[in-house]
Amino acid sequence: MIPRLHVPAALAAGLDTVLPPNATRHVQVLRLQPGAELCLFDGSGGEWRAEVRAIGRREVVVRALAHASVERELARAVTLALGMPANERMDTLVEKATELGATAIQPLVCERSVLRVAGERAERKAAHWQAIVIAACEQCGRNRVPTVHAPLPLREWLESRGDEDSGQRLLLSLDADARPLAAARGDQRNVTFLSGPEGGLTEAEQAFARQRGFEPVSLGARVLRAETAPLAALAVIAALEAAA
Image 1 (cartoon, rainbow, N blue to C red):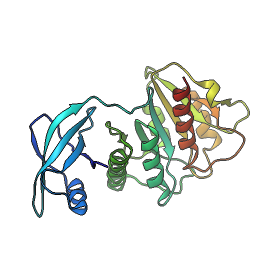
Image 2: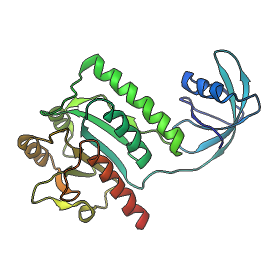
Image 3: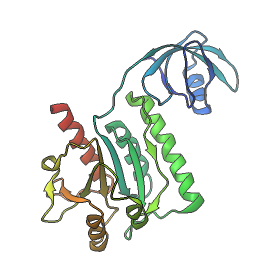
């Protein structure tokens, strides 16, 4: 398989580019030689056939050769807004959400959250998760890189969403009035899923989310873990698109 690497700079035919550190290490670990073929993507869409031009101890130079307009995105832009699960579970959630097609991920601090971060630590966490997203894109074939936003308190995030924001707002819920997710499918181009942390959202948090336009939807009678529910929702959206 031809190695796929992300380059955080605009690519152009015939342009030589120095790979970023993570991509450089990847080339070195694979022991590629000058002339080896690569697939590059810069996140703006499509991918580039490229080749290794030079390999040094600290940098690798590559050249973009030809662009292919290949897209592997969902038809709808999906944002996951979720109460962060603790420990490595958030890392896994971010990786798998990227593979399943999420466009953006908004980590949230909720009343029952175990993981609580703010300020500089929140920024570091977001940067760590963004690196996981890039690695997942390299693996799964996506050419557009999802954005992981810095964690925010749930109420602050909800208040920041204006009524004029377009798109469907869905709240993953076990409440009796929650519609099955498949039945709540809308025709908007954007959809945001709100999902709680370990222990779920409190009644007050759910009520405020409903006030902000979030419709409760259900994934079934079983209680899914905090890191499972948003991935299941994404999988439903992807399956519905594939069947359409």
